[in-house]
Amino acid sequence: MTSEIVPGLRALGMNEYEANVYSTLVGLQKATARDIHEVSGVPRGRIYEILNDLARRGFIGVEEGSPASYYVLDIDVVFDRLKDDYIRSLNETREALKSLSVKPRLPPVSFFILRSGWAIDNHISSLFRRVKKSMVILCHNPEFLQRYYTVIKPLERKIDLYVVVRRKEDYADINLPIYEAGGAVIDLLDVRPVKESVVDGVRTDECAILADGRDFLAIATAGSGRHAVIGSEMPLINYLQKTIVERLTET
Image 1 (cartoon, helix red, strand yellow):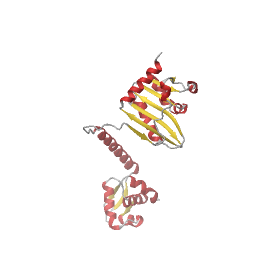
Image 2 (cartoon, rainbow, N blue to C red):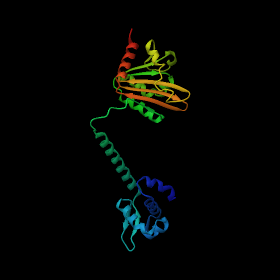
Image 3 (spheres, helix red, strand yellow):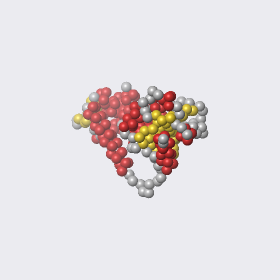
Image 4 (tube, one colour):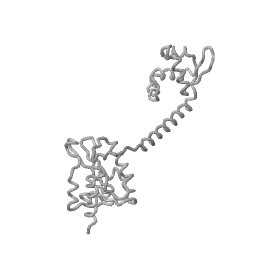
């Protein structure tokens, strides 16, 4: 039984001996150091040191006597305290990291690649949350809009949204502001920002997104893997987004 619990206790910061001693005492509820040594197999020379440390850290209690006995403190109380301490420490560390300021600031990397589905979904969610004014989605595949429809649709009330496609009739069942590409804009749907040297094999382009004239995201699928190129703070992004919107809205 203890062999299944020990890895979890070690994840809480206990070493192997401490985890074995604590899980053994939980099973016994109350015992002397000798009893714990015999059941746990932890060397007798380490038992008192470990028990005293566990007591200091609030996992167990000590009943004075000759010999002394050790007992388990309420597990729910102990672990609720650990959880609260961990969350507090996590929040304090997060705020400390956010407050760091390094001068001079290094320029951000212009473009880089995401190679996991989780990273791509996380970046898409972040991009949709922080967009303030306008977004252009150059869409190659209706499945992209269907997949993210519930997070794209609310953007209509918040920003100027332009979904650009090659054939509008292929998107007739998607209730979004769909624009059919023409002229120079249609050529952008043929551009592949994610090159074959990055994703080998059969590939399917999903979309390219430009947001607020500063953020860029292009997604493609190759085999069973999704890949994305992302970038920000590039003058070209602002120029390209403005040009597309002008071409779409000109009469």
